[in-house]
Length: 74
Image (tube, rainbow, N blue to C red; front, top):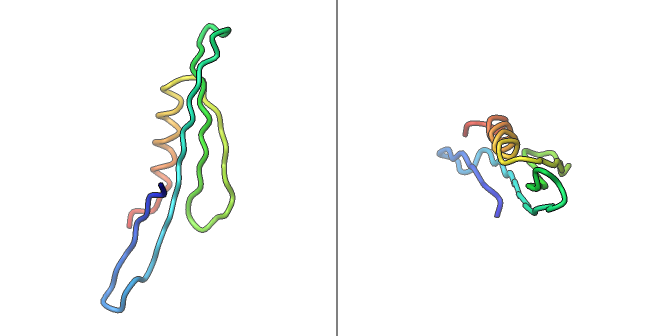
């Protein structure tokens, strides 16, 4: 479900920002560190979807924090 932030003014809606971040997790038993994640995100008015991969929980948390810090404060 997309996260939606809106700003309202006396005249009505003056701005809208939609962003989506999806995390898919699986395990690859044949690796010493089996955790894997695919991170799919969009943000702002850009229609481009960004797909990245992570091999640890820490990397997922880092990527989510980076993505959130790039969202506008509205």
